[in-house]
Amino acid sequence: MTEAKIKTIRSIVRDINFEGRSLLSINDLTDNQIYGLFDLALQLEPWNRSMVPLVSGNVMSTLFFQPSTRTRMSFETAMHRLGGDVISEANPMVTSSAAKEESLSDMLKVVSKYANIIVMRHFNDKDAREAAPYSDAPIINGGWGHWEHPTQALLDLYTLYRTFGKVEGLKVCVASPDLIEARTGHSMAQGLARLGAKVYLASTSARRTPAEVMEKISARGIKVEEAFDFTRDSFNDYVSGMDMIYLPGCSAPKGPEAEAFKVIMDNYYVRYDTLKKVADKDGRTIYITHTLPRRAGEMDLQIDSSPHQLYFEAIAYSVSIRMALVCAILGV
Ligand code: CP
Image (cartoon, rainbow, N blue to C red; front, side, top):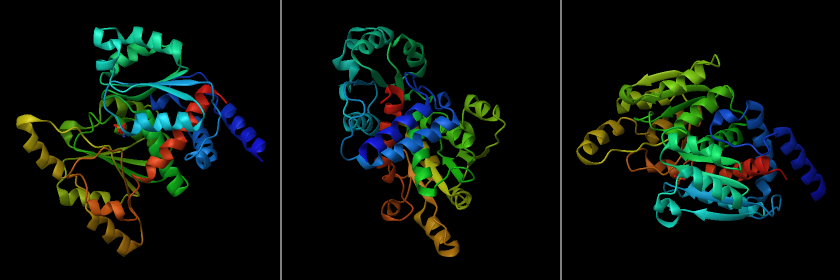
């Protein structure tokens, strides 16, 4: 039985055909590879609280130049669950030779001599993209600047797939007052559109989704809807037609602009009453996911203990899909 399961996993990994590759953008994966990773994650779910030694002998390095709870810990959990080892720099600007002005390219060249796979988060996507080719090991983007966070999109797409059994045809609103800087929103909007979801982008007109992201979507002949400058009522009306509301969060400014931004942010607040009204009237569940961390004032916390909540469900799925990605890159 175990042998049969391992053979199945091996054949899925082989079919995904991503061994030795890096994942910098969600567009580094084909649609078939994304679905292959879903299949593999499903096979691996029984072990996401135990261990299946599929990559033992391999070392993962996690280099996080920005704070993280979920991305770093779920990759490290995934690697441990697969029987691999982890070497981690959670604060490299203090504890590594980056503090002595070592270049990122030198760091990746060196670390890739120790590690078989690197997961890196970096505050500057241009620097990260320029340095990535210096790594001799595959590298996974764990969130780079304001550009992309592809594995967050992958786990949220997988959560959607596990919840609805499909992505195609679902109506999903990616909503934030600031979609310029929403790296998870950029990866997710592209992933959703590619897998055939109906995508709605709700933001302020001043901070709409970057042209680069919109162009990549339209280059594939896919249309997404953008809508701007909501009030709290119009926003809640708009999202009441969705299957899922995807909240990538936003980085609120500090200092003199902070109070003005809170007023804008308040217009994108998800009300529990909106969700309940639709459920009572139409028997339809609108799911909410948030990439987390969230800040006060983004949603009604009653949603946490309601059937609409998907953001904590996604945490468990994140381990399985990251296990799948690690297997696909390292081979089993
Ligand atoms: N969603 C996400 O990337 O969370 P962390 O910043 O905690 O990794």
